[in-house]
Image (cartoon, rainbow, N blue to C red; front, side):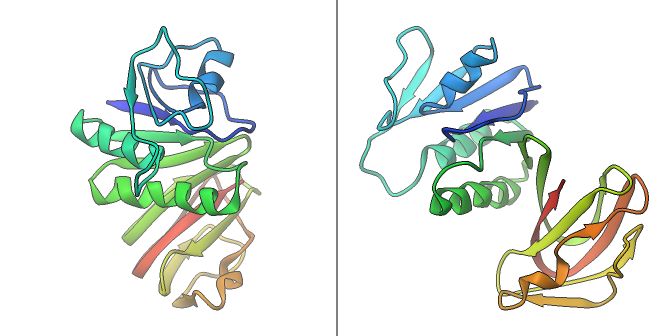
Length: 198
C-alpha cells in the first residue's frame, strides 16, 4: 500500500495524491485544507491543538525522536510499502535536514520513499542502479548523504557522470545537471545520495 506522510511544515505543500494519509502534528491542518481527511494523526501537539474528530496517536512531548520518525515506524508496523512525504521543506533548517533523513529511515525498512514539494521531488538511493523519470531539460542535483559517494555510467545527462567521487567537502560537484531525455539513469558504486528533481 502507498501512503502519504504529511509533516508539520508550516509551509506550502504539494497536492496530496494518496488515498491513505498519515499526518504528523499540525500537518493535519494542511490535509484538511486540501479537503481531505487523514486516516491517522501522530504527534505530541507541541505546535498545534490536538484534533477532536480525528483518530490520533498522542506522543510524549519530551522524546528523543520526531513525529516524522514515529510516522515511519507506523508505516512499517502497518505493512505500508511506499510513502510519499509532504512538507519536508519550509521550516527550520535543522528540521529540514532531519525530515530528509526520513527517506533513508524508510529505505532501511524496505519502504520505497520519496518527498514532494511544489515543483520538487526528492529521492533517496543507495548502491546500485538508479533511474527516474524527469522532463527533458529539467534540472536535477545529486547530493551525497554521508562521507563519500561514487557515481558512474550516467545516461541522458548534460554533464558527464563517469567515476565521479563526491565527498561531504565538495557537494557542488553534482549540482544542477540537466536531463537530455525524459529518463535519467546512473549507478551508485559507493555511498548513498539524495536526488533533487526540479
